Image (cartoon, rainbow, N blue to C red; front, side, top):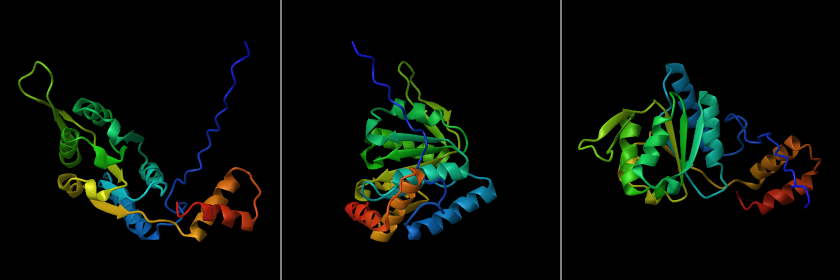
Length: 208
């Protein structure tokens, strides 16, 4: 029997850590940068933020940048994977002050789960019904920032939409912007590449 194949994982991250390093989305970066500066100056958490746009546009990367710039931990969850309110309550009560909770495809939250999220966003607390108890119990939630991402903004229920302090559309990237992204990746990977090749790869991205 042959020895198992060793898999070596390169732990370097190519994600930009600040908005200055993030290529494109200029209309978004200005207001978001001001919000981050204001939160840091006041010593408060950033108000909840939502991003909407197609896949491959950087929603997860922006959540990572927000957490990094705020100095908090990023917890990333796929919203469709949260099947019951207890799952969400467990996630919320494990957060610490200043953390960032990233819910991808947030429009796919089940209705009862989304309703539990409302009080956490607004009052930083959750009320859950435990089996065998007549009255629900209320648990505190650390002051955090929720970053919601969706590919279909129209599916967000109005009560959830209203609890975000800012909602940003994320647009397709130009060929010039994607050329910068590919060039940065090549540099970080120590790969030599000429300008024509960069442009060809960027064009294949089709805006993402």
